Image (cartoon, rainbow over all chains, first blue to last red; front, side):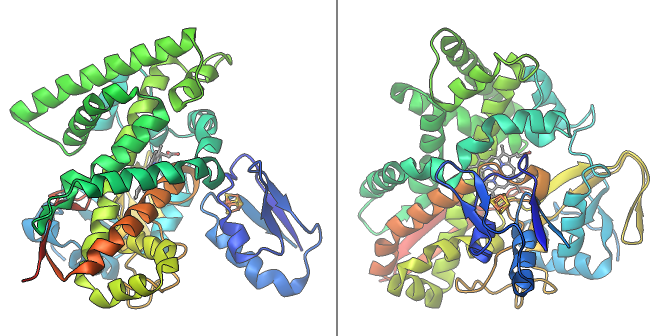
Length: 63
Length: 391
Ligand code: HEM
Ligand code: SF4
C-alpha cells in the first residue's frame, strides 16, 4: 500500500501526522515527508483516518 | 413540511431544532430567504464541498458578493472556482501554517492580558467590545502590516465591513459604505508604498506576487486584504464569545478545563463544532444537479449548512452536548476541501490563547450571563455577552 500526496493542496497543518505519525512528518520548513514508501497493511486503519481527516483532501491511498 | 424561513425570529434565536427537521426531511430542501436549497446532513455537506465542479463558489451577477468584487476591482478566493482560486490561494498558503504562526504566540498572550487588565472591576462587564472584538482585529492588522497609529482607524473600518456583511440598511449602510471606501483607499496606498519599498508583511507578500506575470492584479490584491479582514475577524470573535458562553452554561466543562488546561486545544475544536461561527455559506448549480436522489434545478443557490452537519447525530454522538473531551476531529466549522479556511490555524491559536487567558477570571467567581445573539443566519455568535458576578 502506498500513500499519494497532492503537494499543491497540502498546506502543512499536520492533521495527518496526528493520526498516523508512523507515516507522516511535517518538517521545520513546512514540507510534508512520507516516511515509508511501502506501508504495511496493519497501518491501513490509521492511514484511512488520515485521508479522511485531511481538510484539503490532499491524500490518496493506492493499493 | 411547509416551506420554512431561516429569518423567522424563533429560528434566528435558536436554529438547531429546525436544522434537525431539515436533516430528517431530505438531502436538500428548498427554504427561504430566496428559495435556496439547504443541505444539512453531514455526509451531504461533505459531498457538496467535494464536488466543486458541480457546485460553484462564484457569485451570480446580481448577488451581493458580486458588488464587493466590482467595487474593489478584482475577485477574491472565497468567490472563485479554479483555476483562479488556486492561482490566488497559493500566494498565501504557506503564510498560515502552524509553524509560520508560531511567532505570534507571545504577542497574542500579551494582547489578551492587556485587554483583560482594562475590564471594569465592579463585577459586571460585556466581553464583546472589550475582549472578543479587539483581539482578532489587532492581530490581523499587525499581520497585514498596518501601522500602530492607524490600528484604531482600522478597527472602525473593520466594524463597518462587518455591518455591510450583516446587511445593514439605510443610514447605517451609507455610513458603513463610506468607511469601507476609506479602508480601500488606505489599503491601496499601503500596497503602493510596498511597490516602492518591499515589506515582509501580508500586504507586502501580495504585492511581491504582482511581479510574476499573470499571478495577481492590483484589484485582486485589494480584494484579498478585504477578505482577510471580513473572513477572519467576526468569525474569530464569535468563536471566542460562543465558547465563553458555552463554558458558563456548562460549569462541569469549565471545571474540567480549570483542572487540566491541556484540554484547551480540544475544547477549541469542540467549540468550533458546537458553535459553528459560520453557520452556512453558498454554492450555485449551473445545471440540474443530483444530490443523493434530489434534483436541484439549474441556477439555484445552495446553502451548505456547516452548523447542521456539525450537529448531525449520524456523525457525532449526542451532538447537542458541549463536551470538551469528545473526539470532534473532522468537524466542518472551517469548511472542507478546496475552500477549507485559510485562516484556520490563526483562529485556533487566537481562541486557545483567549480562553486560556480568561480562564482564571472565569473560575474565580460564579458568573451569570446575559447573551444577545447576532440576528443572522450566516454568522452566529454573541453580539453582547454580559457577565455578572453572582451575589
Ligand atoms: C473561528 C474562526 C473562523 C471560522 C469559523 C471560519 C470559517 C470559514 C469557512 C467555513 C470557510 C469556507 C468557505 C467555503 O466553503 O466557501 C472559510 C474560508 C476562508 N477563511 Fe475562514 N474562518 C475563520 C477564521 C478565519 C481567519 C482568522 C482568517 C484569515 C486570517 C480566515 C480567512 C479565510 C479565507 C481567506 C477563506 C477562503 C478560503 C478559500 O476560498 O480558499 N478565516 N472560513
Ligand atoms: S493533513 Fe493534509 S494538508 Fe495537512 S499536512 Fe497532512 S496532507 Fe497536508
